[in-house]
Image (cartoon, rainbow, N blue to C red; front, side, top):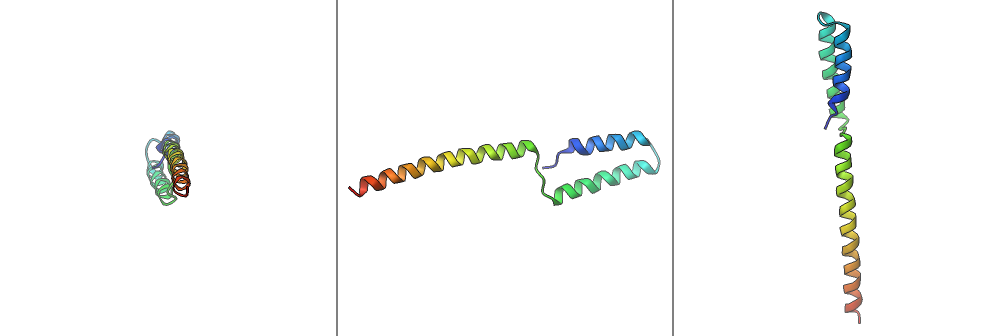
Length: 79
């Protein structure tokens, strides 16, 4: 659900500033805070979004076909 690439990049940059000491703890805390925020916002990855978009498109196609079939059956029944 969370794109870890962004967090990994931020973590890497913070780690470059200071490999040890208080900034190392800041890195861990910042990463945890950003991860928590992303989870609360219920963000999804682009891949998950694209998959759901494809599922929706297929569902719409099936719905359109079923609506046409029902219309045809109703037309035949009314004759």
